[in-house]
Image (cartoon, rainbow, N blue to C red; front, side, top):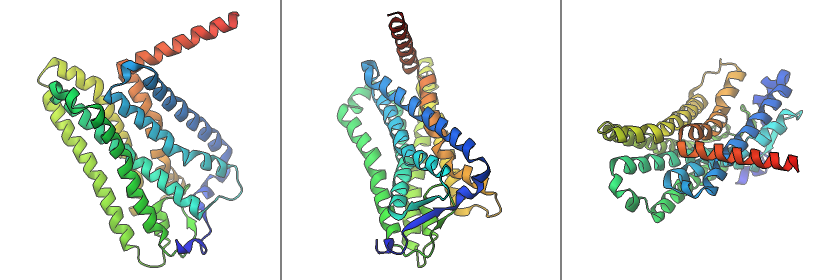
Length: 315
């Protein structure tokens, strides 16, 4: 990390397009972040507090929500602060930290969704073996791998990026993004490009694994009415979340590398942040509305909270 002394801060030029409506954007950002916190924390607490939801599928959903809180914490507070600031800068170290958290958040999402696909495959295609296959030990190993492998990948990414000699300090985004830093390198960034493609291929394989798993699930579900019911209740929300995350990340990744310079900065900004907006908001809502157990439990908790509030007001 010898270039820390030469590049102390980065400027975020993506904010240049937000000058005329920063207060409006700040209000929407604050509202969006509050919604993300409320819906994700609500789902996490519902799963933790209800022993009937201490099943593999709900444990994985809980981890998906925790990851949503983890990833958005690296973006929203800094973004809101920058909207109120005259200049938008970020230190070199904090920039790399933001890259690490946001990138690991995105890849952990895919890992958890892949684990959930395996869980649903065993539940529907091998129901008699489900409890022996998805034991407590297996669940612990799967969750650990879903977090540790992406984190280790991002450690390598940050290590490679930190060793680059940079000839510029302007990032044309609203936040720090690895490819934007790599493009500022004076010398060769071949190692970064190769490892980046390896990581992208690795997580494309996750998507392929999920698609293949669901191909088997559909075949199995069509054989019986009970199988179709289980598939609709537990797999449809998973597919919706997969589509949500994949579309968001695909747009951002492809645009970062191959996007046209003629596109307006506002469009670039939206393309850059939509994977930090839609998945964290929609994932817990999708699961909360479609999965019957969670929906009933959330409604019951809301009713209980309302009754307690009425009793306190009467007193």
